[in-house]
Image (tube, rainbow, N blue to C red):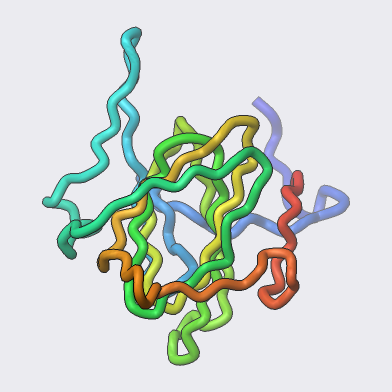
Length: 182
């Protein structure tokens, strides 16, 4: 075992990490008011895997499922920025390596202007609820296609789509898409 030292005994001292998870490993905050993250358990054995996606006893599914669609994202591509004014998107990140980035655009929100990132992989699938007024973009940082299945709280309106868009490279939403080490 190594000897304990005080923070004054190292150079550079650096900054301590703030806590991000509780004692059970659950994320302390999503960073944006109304956003919900639920990590799912993967059950693996020699035959394959099983993930329970939809269990209506969980609060995540308090609104009924009325519509669903799947989205694929090619390697090293970004889909977004998109924002809905009427619906909540309820993502199930089904496969691949995906970074979902959110920006709270709601002027009256206590987290207005906050950015938050969520990373998903085949080993760390999850559910993510994105409320109306929150901009979102999905980046595939892997080497194969990734898939999201969305269960929005409203069906798609072909005549009057509930979707606003901003080009992810326009700078209108200030976010650097580079993936950094650190």
